[in-house]
Length: 453
Ligand code: ATP
Ligand code: MG
Image 1 (cartoon, rainbow, N blue to C red):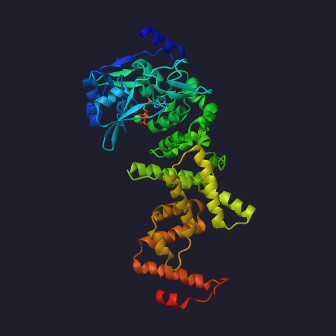
Image 2 (image 1 turned 180 degrees about the vertical axis):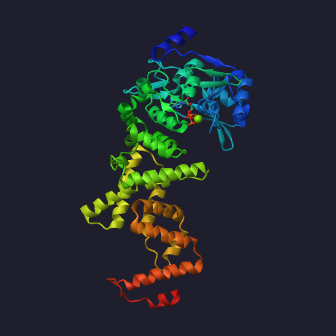
């Protein structure tokens, strides 16, 4: 295929991008800020005669003077050729075939330049009725690769051959103007891949940029297209949106664009015009605390966030079940947990290990009030006690009253010494014997009570 053909194909769907080369002298990106592993990969590809560029968020964040969280590499070597160059290489991906070069836990992602799609090429690329790209394995030139990228600020290439930066879509200017701007016609680009709507919002918040007008305009109207995205991909995206350090603000911007309800209809049913429901309150609290933990480099568990933001919808469901079917509250919570999680995972594929933890955290909410005898001591030894307690504290802030007092009790109990703990439990025991209880007098098992005392 000659260059003319390529250009013509490019013209059909995409504007002709003008390449602007910024030489090493004209930009401030220093190799010292690029990870050693990324440099190794770039140099090895270059040494073997291939083109090799740092692309995407890595270049963008370096240009902004930040530290990128990962480095992506683009090359004209095919996945097979890449594999032959690196022993520590794994080929992954169906939708996009990519090479992962593994350096222990650090992974450098290497992608072969992608090309445009031709209708006749059904083996390699598949489009849905809505215009969505289902399979996308056409290799192409670097120019085509640039046109296929989402935002102008993500289409800059750092060339390891001469340390220049190749800016295809005016990314440098948009960085200066602090704008998230799609390359090409926004509606077409969102139809090709609706996740780009989520990415626009995510980058706007993370970089503190505005979404350029034409890029922002169709989002509200096209948000419904997100329902066609596989649940596994939406799960990954939702974590990037909510657990990468800017969750609170990202959630609020998602709401402004009516996008949040596409991901979490179960939750958005509990939204109010003035953001005043318990669900909205706990969303703010849990996202804020996640953001702080990310900032402090603490571990974050997605299960905790999901347990928090789905709690009130689950409880409301449980209360309905009690009303409608006459089962006890404990069973109703179990059943409502199933129903709510089943509904959620259809849209957002939360992995099983996390839904198990969500259930545990929820069940603990039913157990934490019951502290008599040895119960409190035993509860504290449970694996998920800490998460259950942290969640109780958060509920205390939302609900106040008894729950707040209960959380305070547990707070004191944990920091108290042995004797003090025993005294706290004794107090509870006393309080509960003073209360008139319906079935107090069951025949005591003498043997057992002897060994216990
Ligand atoms: P970060 O890693 O900081 O979240 P990033 O821009 O590196 O941001 P990645 O998801 O790592 O985002 O993607 C790397 C690059 O691949 C992007 O910068 C962009 O050029 C391209 N890209 C990713 N997703 C898409 C998409 N859905 N459509 C078009 N291009 C995409
Ligand atoms: Mg990246």
